[in-house]
Amino acid sequence: MDHVEVPRRTFDYLLTGFVCHEAIDLARSYAESGIAHPGDPFGNVFAWLWEANRGNAVSLFADLLAEARRHAPEGKGLKLDDLIRDLRFALHNTQLSHVREYEEVERTLRAKVPEYFGGRTDL
Image 1: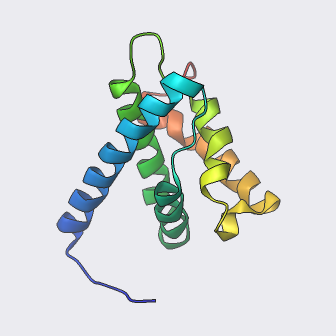
Image 2: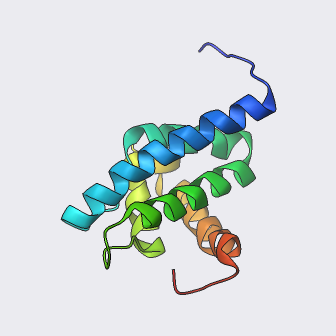
C-alpha cells in the first residue's frame, strides 16, 4: 500500500471536504430510504482512522452526523442510532466488520459522539 505524507492542516482540509461530500449523499439517501449507510468510501476511511487514531475516527463520524443533519430535508434528520447501526454495512471490507470489533466501535461512538453535541442524548 502506498503511503503519502501531507501536512496536518492539509490532512484536516482533505477530511473536511470528504466528510461534507459524503454527508450530502447520506442525507439524501436517508431521507429517501431511511437507511443510514454512509458509503463504502466513508467506511474505508473510518476504518483506517480507527486503527491510526480513534479520536480522529470518532470526530470524523460526529462530523458526518452533523453535516448529514444539516443537509437533511425538514423532518428527515439523521438519527445517531441509525448511523451507528448502518455504519456496519460500510465496514464490510475491513477488520471492523467482525462482531467483536464492531461492538467496540459501537460502544465508543455511543459514548463519545454526544460530547461533540454538547452531551445531548437526543441525537
